[in-house]
Amino acid sequence: MKCSIEDFEAARRAYLRRRGVDESAGCLRAALIDMDGVLYDSMPWHARAWHRMMEENGVETTVDEFFAYEGMTGKATIDLLFRRAFGRDAGEEEAKRLYARKTEIFKAFGKKDTMPGADRMLKALEALGLRRVLVTGSGQKSLITRIDGDYPGAFAEADRVTALDVKRGKPDPEPYLRGQEKAGCRPEETIVIENAPLGVRAGVAAGCFTIAVTTGPIPREAFEREKADMIFASMPEFADFLESLSLRADGKA
Ligand code: MG
Image 1 (cartoon, helix red, strand yellow):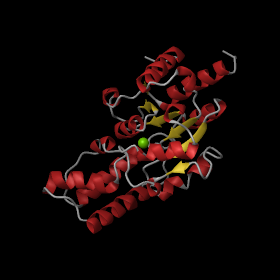
Image 2: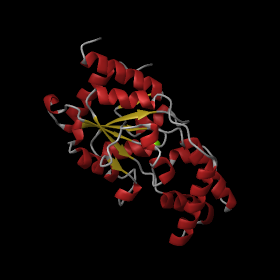
Image 3: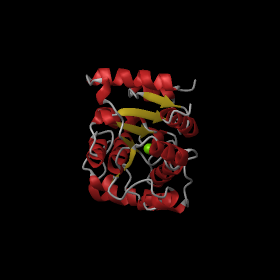
Image 4: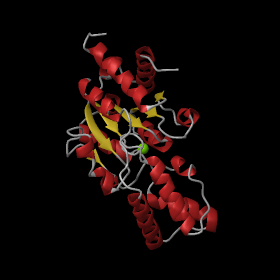
């Protein structure tokens, strides 16, 4: 079932009530936007790179399980799997080496596609007058440096939060709190756009109206469990919705 403007308004009202904020104070001013699985269809490659690196190190995993870990730092993911396989955390140096190997495999897979519909999503957010802030847990320079070529003008240099800017990664709220600071907005003035359950948890914990777009194999229920305010079945569907919102704001629909 597609989300309508009425669904959005009802979800906003419920969100503002939950936060104890007057509806008139809930004017949206900024969108805090995740990168992997939102702007780039990169998650299948991350998952395959993780799986292969772990295989090389004698850790049994499935490719799909890595979609559920999206947002966690590299060290946290490695420790989780090391505890499962060997009953211990990885050492600092060991984790660095393994993460570097995962990054190497990821890069060797070549250029990652942009997410279909993401360009329309960014343009519609601009048309709605929302400041766009990138909030990614990634420290992968290969993608972060591509943003300006793939989405020219979408993100001002100052409006980016990456793994290098935070102490604690998602699901901690810190990345989205930093995004709010960069935008100079209160939580109720921002929306978070996420594709990962742990990213949704981070957005909700930061107090933002959090929208999940399911762009991978994770079922809708996982996003409901994390209390996403709205859930869209795909990026093109979310872009369609934003475009209809923007047309209505212009009085054209
Ligand atoms: Mg993501």
